Length: 321
Ligand code: AN0
Ligand code: CP
Image (cartoon, helix red, strand yellow):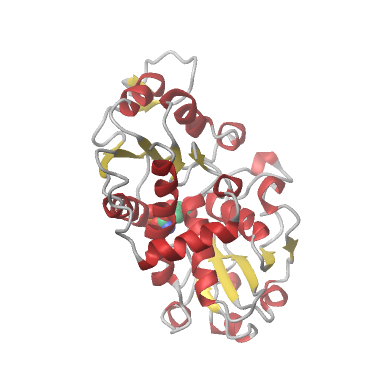
């Protein structure tokens, strides 16, 4: 595996889930694989889970992690090609990437969407430079349009908790005070479309996800109707993807608090489990009662972040042998 970005990169999902189960039940079984190997974990943005789970998974595999926070620990990096570098950015990705790559065997990158230039974001301009200029396997740790380690962990969690062969999974938009990227809902949609689940997306009009990720998923604009009979409720805020109106890209179109997932929303489900990738704003995205209920999976879901990224790194290491 040279890159982990799309659901296709992991291949057969049943096989991946089986591998996740063995990694979870025996996390140190592949400790020899990572001997004398290094993963460079590069952050352009904040993180709690991704930073810690990726390091933990590397250690489980016997690999050494190096973490770099761009702009805090390093020089500020220019990401656009062909510009006159007269701003506060001292170094270009074009040099920084091959230098970082020369110190490691795998690179993981977190670089959020800027939410101002749709083309720059949706072309994955930064991640593509990492793939092109590093010559090393690259893992997206949430790049402009995708967060595959999260979606894989979400799928592992659904597989662990499902009470039906083909559960109904509803992804609902929820309000948030700041404009957030579409990476999490994009990847979740892409992975759910590939999985054996009955998948429904609900959001206010204008929040339609790019068809590259939403595929043929059912979109129901009536949130309550969408939630009826759900087995899993996956809440997430995202800003306008700019599909119907490109000039709205990255904007907040609604702060409608009636979309906050509370007990009234959960009451129409089939005693659904609640999921969120975290970090979550309480009483904006979800009420205290719902996130604190025994049906909330947010903590086991976060714990599975070690498992998902460990499967990915394990496969990359196996190909290096
Ligand atoms: C980010 C997002 O919505 O993409 C990271 C989520 C994993 N969330 C925030 O910035 C709050
Ligand atoms: N879910 C997730 O990626 O969390 P962090 O932003 O804290 O890494």
